Image 1 (tube, helix red, strand yellow):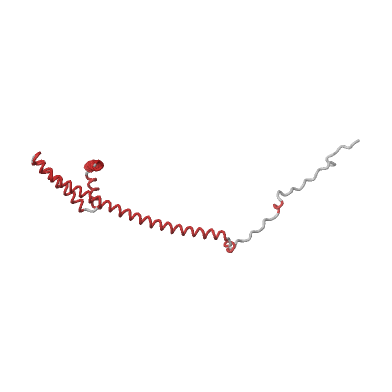
Image 2 (image 1 turned 90 degrees about the vertical axis):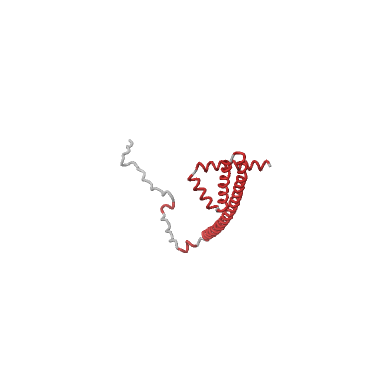
Length: 181
């Protein structure tokens, strides 16, 4: 008869040793050499990049300063030209207002004969006021005129709006008349 296998006689396989996951995993990592100052400076590409960066930065600063100086010069020239144009405009306005005052004064006699002395006096009073305005325009510089106009507008905004409308109407008529002629 055959012998029954007993647990004692049964052969058990021995456990296998596990293989390492990577061949180099069991080796120790090589020790790093300490970085020296010389090693940090021995990068010619890094040095070239730094030198190029510094050169570009310097050139950009010079160009910015040059552009700023040019802009300042142009702003000064524009300011001078604008002030000259404003002075010419002020002189022409003073001349036009003076001519208006003279026309009112000359027409006061005609108003006396056609409508009566009282209306002629109104025309003379208006001519005197307009002549005073012409003199004021002629004597004051632009800064004084701007300040006095600003004060007048703050004190009497309705009168300022009305005066602007009348001046705009007169200018439109003058321009329309000069285009037709």
